[in-house]
Amino acid sequence: MQVFTDVKRPATVVGMAAWAAAIIFIASMPLAWSKEQLSSRECEDLGFTGLALCSDCHTLAEYIKDQELVADCLKCCTEDSDDATSKITYSGAVLEVCMRKLVFYPEIVGFIEEEKDKFPSVKIQYIFNSPPKLTLLDDEGQHKESIRIDNWKREHILQFLQDKVKLSSAI
Image 1 (spheres, rainbow, N blue to C red):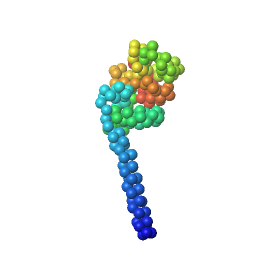
Image 2: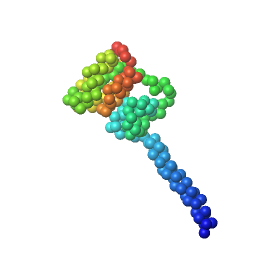
Image 3: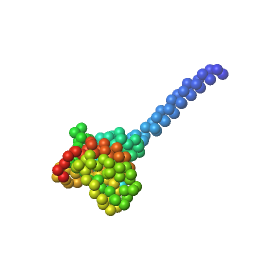
Image 4: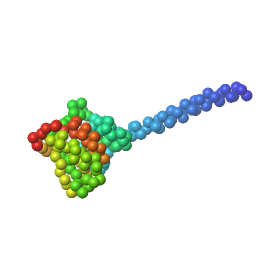
């Protein structure tokens, strides 16, 4: 009888190893699926109209710890072709927001009232029914990208503008 007991133990260990391998395989499946791309309309609905480069999503992950938001960003981005493209800066920006909805965005109100003067190239534009967004401008003052900032904290707005918008501008 003891011989059969010894035989069962290795079989149990092998079975457990197979289960462990299956669990690891299944757990890694979402990582393979996470590279799924969303349509431009779906990305715009999520607020990712301007975060075109995946390096921007990684930068976003440094400031915003919401893994689901970062995963959505990665589904909407394109791989960087060159490290220099992640350092794109803009000559100015327009913060668009609906004046009636400002009460729902205290972080944006705080930025406008207390921090906006640090960025002379950033203008505020009140547009009826507009969700809060940053429109980034090129050297000619033309619209290049838009990024919704509904859920951004003041420090995230500050850091983003410091990284992406030149401090002085002729716009």
